[in-house]
Figure 1 (cartoon, rainbow, N blue to C red):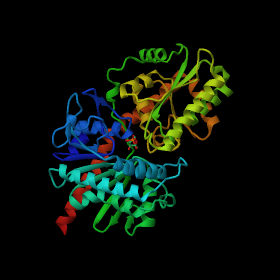
Figure 2 (tube, rainbow, N blue to C red):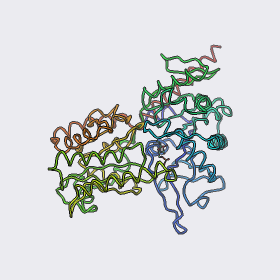
Figure 3 (cartoon, protein in one colour):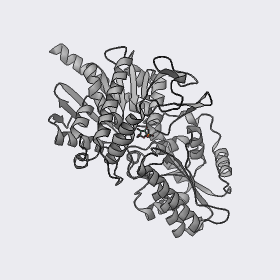
Figure 4 (cartoon, protein in one colour):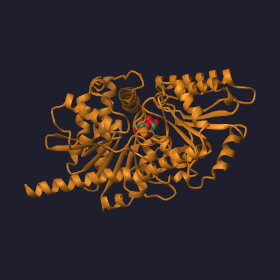
Amino acid sequence: RTLLRSELPNAEILVVSNREPYIHNDDDGQIALQRPASGLVTALEPIMRACGGTWVAHGSGSADRLTVDENDHIQVPPEAPTYTLRRIWLSEEEQDGYYFGLANEGLWPLCHIAFVRPVFRSSDWEHYVAVNRKFADAVVAECKTTNPTVLIQDYHFALLPAMIREKLPDATIITFWHIPWPNPEVFSICPWKEELLSGLLGSSILGFHTQFHCLNFLESVDRFLECHIDRERSNVRAGNATTLVRPYPISIEWPPLALAGQPPVPECRKRILERYGLKPSVRLAVGVERFDYTKGIADRFRAVGSLLERHPEWIERFTLVQVAAPTRSRLEAYRDTQVEAQNQADAINNRFGTDNWKPIILVPTHHEPDEVFTLFRAADICLVSSLHDGMNLVAKEFVAARDDEDGVLILSTFAGASRELHEALIVNPYDIQAMGEALADGLSMPAEQRRDRMRLMREIVGEHNIYFWAGRMLLDASRIRKRSNLERQIA
Ligand code: F6P
């Protein structure tokens, strides 16, 4: 946090993302607030609370202009406002084309190895360009200075960096891509690959979670654009502009806000077991995600089946509570994912369940951060079986929730988090039997080993927290600024 402040003396900060940090819904004339299920929001919100500034995002709640002033500004967080939320309103066609279409039927499956075919429609692309332009205009209109620091988030806004650069040549533009970047062969599927790459190269810094994704990006630039790549310095020079391309593994606030006010672990456990009608002796695993096909939810259910088949001693003694927030449900691939997971849970419950016990409890509803943390604290095991994931902050939140230094994390090798959390039980989610064995190992792991593993993971997440993430990017940005000032003076 100190680094953040020292790197931002008097700087004007703007964050741009599709997802807004607080959704304002109209509940019979009253405003009801919801925190979205979004790793991006989990990560960025503490930064904005610490730095202040303006967050520009798509307005998604039903309480549209009820709460806002004539400039569409809301001061947040509601309990103690420190920054401004500027909501951008999109028509249904814009949302269909830009968000559901190009972003989530095109770029999302393009960037994740989940074997869902990307769909690219020209009409979606036109909306994507127009919405990026709409956000660029809003950012420029919000700026009070000519050299703000703009933090652009994710695959919804690949064109935004160049559009902002055009209007604000002195801005420091830091773009963070929250999902994986594919290899050039896969990326070449996209009909607008050159436009996306040129758009992103409007950034001063372009961040990914892992070195591997940075290399994929550099290879893509090398293959499809004419520009100079300096692999040693990890940057790309196009015309006069240079973009630093580096890994900045994202993280969470430490300690997280949702931890404050949590009851002690035994109380959390009692509450959760009672809520789901489970016996006090039952060992509990939890999964928490959006209902996304990249998360491997049906696969982890199959792993529960494998555990019970190969280790029948866990029948009636183990339950997985899976919380899954519905997401992007307008898309068929997402509806299919829900149906497949529900069918899989039913099949395993029918096969192994008894009159008073079910091995899988699937709760397909949104949960607020406090509820999620209680669940984490109640659990013996947290199971993250993503088929592919940029980072996966659920894994880090589980670690942060366990101030009792207990609990086992089972983590997919295809989540970026596995590059940092080596003390998790690392699994291949495509290997169902091995995942079942990891559950068995986790359930029988001695307390001392659980503590030693958890302690190490807590050290890593505590140290490399979200302030460290933002601080490193801002420090790099400030060095870039100082160097170019010096170069200008010398010239
Ligand atoms: O991190 C990937 C991401 O797509 C974020 O951009 C987003 O906020 C989150 O997952 C949830 O997705 P959505 O905003 O589409 O519900």
